[in-house]
Image (cartoon, rainbow, N blue to C red; front, side, top):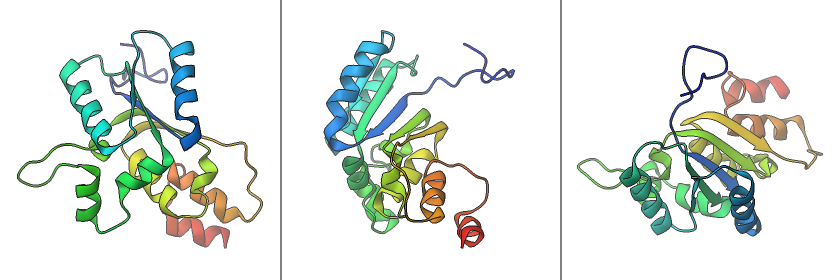
Length: 178
């Protein structure tokens, strides 16, 4: 029950999510266990079934929700997004359907979504779209990258838009940099 950025509001009691390259999932898990406080519950979202199990466990345990950290690889996030028609994406992600069904990853609200290797979103492709969809329900979005963007300013615009930075629509930002 701590203040949120020195305001009267309080920090939301929500889980957090880290999107990482495939090869670093276990490294992120080990470092989270080493450096973050107990009673941290780490959920590795390696499949649709793992996502559904994690959501069920988070909801079963109840508050406090901030002790939950979800770690998912970018390739798994893109697989859940589907990149098809909205109904196809919802079915593939396990999201709630009219008249029933279960909640999916894109239905959750997060305290923080952290994207490791944000440069994977620089070209507006599948990684960008899946990241943008996930970060829409996050209180705080953080992008990590050490990779320089050698091609164009447009790459930086895509990265910023993927983590909800800015305030202009993507179309306005693209027009501005072109």
